[in-house]
Image 1: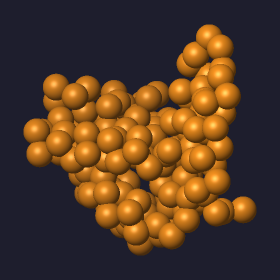
Image 2: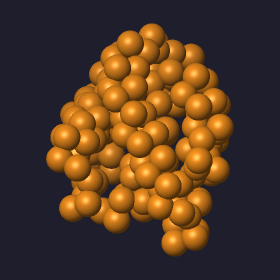
Image 3: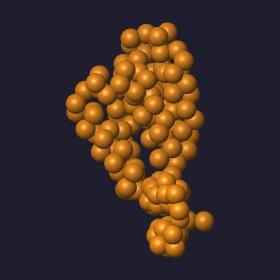
Image 4: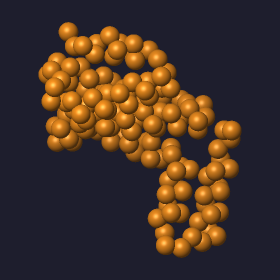
Amino acid sequence: MSRFQEMISTMKTVGYGEKKQFLQYLVQIAERAKHQLSREDQQDLLAFAYEEVDRMLRAIPAAGSYKEKDVIFECENYLMGIIMHLSGGPDHVPQEHLMKIRALVDLVDKERYIETALDGVFEQKTVTQADITRLLFWVRQCTDE
């Protein structure tokens, strides 16, 4: 049995606020000690990550506020780190999971409309009034405090 099995089963039942710390921890493990993990540990962690991709694909559209989505976005970032470190890169991810991962990345990119608009403003050499107007349009859409 994998030494992460108990943690994984607990993390399947908690919210994304609590899950974020666990995913952060797993990224550090995957980054620093992936060669010290047993094959079973790596497989269990990857299986958890692939299941989490499915959960996030359902959770983001169901989230009630941008603030709730933002926590999931952070978790998605850590999740991608886990998958890339433990799988060895996109060439080693099974096609069915790769398609879901791409769908999740696209969904997060689409749903992070404030950050996307802000990134667009800062990518330019000069900022115009139209850029600020576009950014404010998206910021006003967000009703979170």
